[in-house]
Image 1 (cartoon, rainbow, N blue to C red):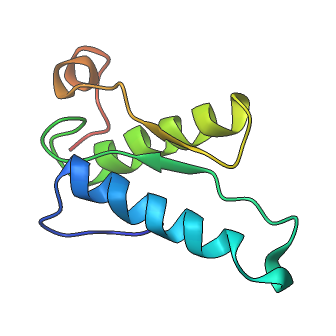
Image 2 (spheres, rainbow, N blue to C red):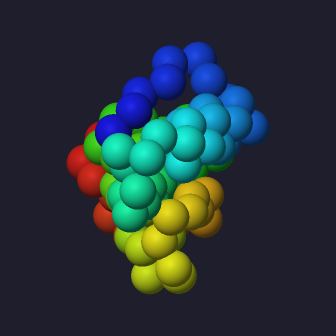
Length: 88
């Protein structure tokens, strides 16, 4: 997990893309892939635990759809509250 305080969704995606590109260069990392899930406050969650859950859902979406990629959470705070949320 990478926590990026005061980082909006666009900038978070840029960070993930830079890390992914950096991992492709070294030969020591041949065969290693990076799957990532991006979630941000306030777009995908209201606070802590809901944010982690949104990022986790996006991560598993990346793994399901081919690995070595990133996915942006589709979760919205209203959805979290409607489903009972995470207690936050």
